[in-house]
Image (cartoon, rainbow, N blue to C red):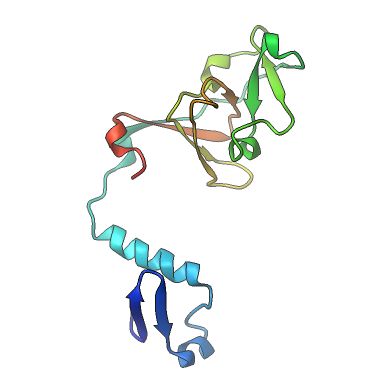
Amino acid sequence: MEHVEYFNLNKLIVSSDLLDKGEFRLNSDYYEAMHISRKFHKSATILLKEIASVSHPGITKRTYIDNPKFGIPFLSTSDIQFYEAIDKKYVSKEASKNLSDYIVNEDMILISRSGTIGTIAMVDKNMRGYAVTEHAIRVELNDKEYFGL
């Protein structure tokens, strides 16, 4: 990038005439992402399908109940950001169809596919065994070596 001088990952100088032309932004997040992206593309890339299984349960009828003794906590895509159900919904263990397709495992990565697209959550031991909406794509790594890359 011409007219941009990087001091380190957190500082850079942009010529003010480029800002006047509208070629650059004052939001530093833009430049940090661009810098990280450039660094990333110099490294080897791996296709997700080579290291993980990606799934998404279909739409099915859920039966909500109030008694946690007979249900499983149910999380929406908004809830997965906080690792707990905001309104404490439970789905019936007996009356909900294909419930096992909605249960998440520890270390699974959830990505919202509806509403606010791209919100990511990692399933930890506290969220393990919860039912999660069909609006979240599930990514399960074949090998923990790739976890966090």
